[in-house]
Amino acid sequence: MKYHYVLLLLFFQLHNYVCGSKPQSSNHLIQEGEKHFKNLRQLTFSGENAEAYFSSDGKKLILQAHDGDSLCDQIYIMDIASGSTEMVSTGNGVTTCSFFQYPDDDGIIYASTHLANSDCPPKPDYSMGYIWKLYEGYDIFKASMDGSSLQRLTDAPGYDAEATFSFDGQRIIYTSIESGDLELWTMNPDGSGKQQLTNRLGYDGGAFYSYDGSTIVWRAFYPESKKDIADYETLLSENAIRPMALQLWTMNSDGTNKQQVTDNGAANFGPFFFPNGKRIIFSSNLHDEKGRDFDLYAINTDGTNLERITHYEGFDGFPMFSPDGKYLVFASNRNQAKRGDTNIFICEWEEFLD
Image (cartoon, rainbow, N blue to C red; front, side, top):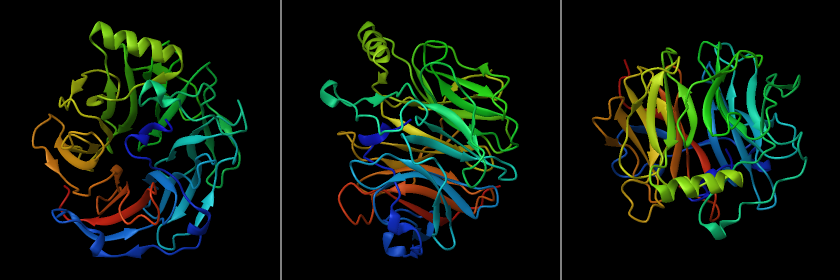
């Protein structure tokens, strides 16, 4: 889902000269109190770069990026060791939410509007406050690692995006408005076998499987008051939502046993399981009364033992552990070359993950 986190502080994008730029490692980028970080390395150096996720061998990242107000996000694959990047989306429309096809990196998935319109869509109208625009042209596509052999997986009218693979490669989970509301669905890697997992008024999205495939974590906003319901339904009819109070939830991979994890009135998003499946790392503005400062936090799956991970005065988000649990990748505003930049960082994780 794009343009999403502009309040969540403008993130995302890669830049032409990042291609060929070598990652830089410097512990001066680690803020006081960030005790879990070691050898923090900056991987991109300009523009808005975000949602960087590991390949199954931990050697590559797939991410969305752009540099410049007139450009739209496209999808890139980066070699972590060298920093070299290659665009693997079509270069048309706007793209979001890419992921490798586990367990053998047989391909990639991402959402794109290029079939509906090859141009960048207009930016959201913020006269109604901060909103996310749900571009109707978004569909989910699967491709080879180099972007070839593009296959359309969804074709229902309206928004289909935010797709990730299970780590055994058997299912894809994604957000769709096919039912008339923004619900979580799963499907087979070829687009068949679609199944709806959630059915509650409100937004369900940004879902990830645990590494063992047993559990799903996602972010949700469920309006309850008449005012909030009316606002949600009005915006949804205009292909938009207002993501101001996102809470984290978990459920079994078949959609049963839904459990709320956070209940803090803040905007919580980008949840990802620790490799052991017992804790969740995520981004939240819960410590900032103005709601502009996002840091990484960790929490047990039952909502206990909340721990603040980052302490940067800006944006830290979209965390993912490498499959072996040794590294963490995330997006951050730290060490900006220019105002508004969000870059990708990787560090060694200082903690034994069983």
